Image (cartoon, rainbow, N blue to C red; front, top):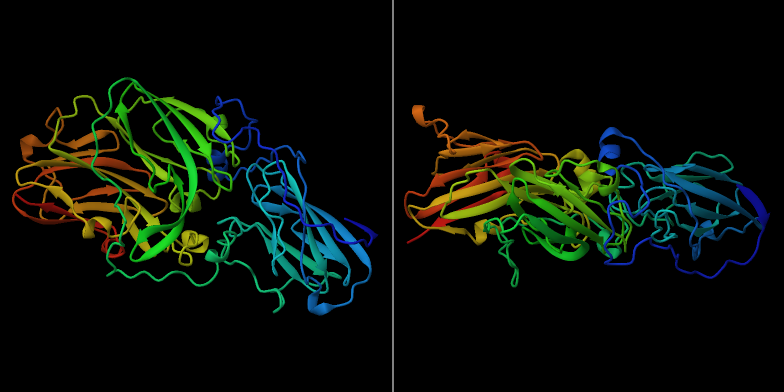
Length: 491
């Protein structure tokens, strides 16, 4: 941190980080520079900073930044802040009262970050390896800053500015925060109180529920898919509420992939979002170092794995904080059929997840995620959607439900009112039924499939008669928040 003679502010200009891969390009798993191991690092708390490379700079002036119109000292203090894990280093800057402060943010982390000060000054988004400058104006008292990407502030990305060593408190009244609870950073839609769900709301006109009907596994042994990250504004999440959703291929959950044991999946991940993202396939047994790394906007990677075991497997974004990325819609399922899987009349897939509402049209509230306090629960991305537009069956049909608990944090107890399951496949093994007829000799049956986050399986039942069969989590408080459907049986 150095003092230099004051000079006029430079004009605002966008940062210009260079991206190693052009948008939509396909790169081999090792083609991009290796960064921190997102899945392993987030789980174990290991933060490995990437090498700093200043590839673009910008300065963003704070209009009216001088607190209360105070007269400055005529001096400018310059400070450099870097990123380590989910921390700014240093996390406190002390300047002489009356000095103008200019901050250079060098993003030495492994994903996109920014710096926003109370009052509005911002670096804008800064790619990993890039830098940007921020004119904080004349400092006369304590000021707080943070990374505005959802979840990052809650993870500890907070910067405090003090004047003459005074302890940092709340921002001055003239410097109202531009975001709170770690879910700012997406414009005006992120400001204000959380949206209020209306559990009686009908499906909005033009809304199409996620297709829960499951097609058979495709032919062939090599399955190539492109998953493109997009951030979708005003996506319907149920109960009359919209949110900005982070998605694979524009839907939350992402596409359901299917194959057989021994099949190879070649996945091209393309990041068309505004921040860093990644992907983790539980269906593959791979080293996470390269394929699960975060990639910046405009980058891509190829993730290949061979399915060695049967089951329904979660995939999700593994960029920290994973809980927020997953809760924002970045999850899906890969179904690998067990050998000898019998045919049924209908198959449905239901992925339970939690929704933590920010403001109407805004992004996930990271504080609620950390508290495990969802506003809504859902099957396949929108609360109550299949209660209002039921799943279909006919009397006498055998129906198979593939069920996945995507979380990020709460379990489920899958139950269908009026039916009993005669076949239960849980985490790779038949508990009832199957080719060996497990339980047949003692006439066993099942009432619920209990799953922890990231667990899955399937159940089967025969529909006995015309009727409306409620499909729920038997954790009733969660059912009442939207994790429910109707199986409508008609002639």
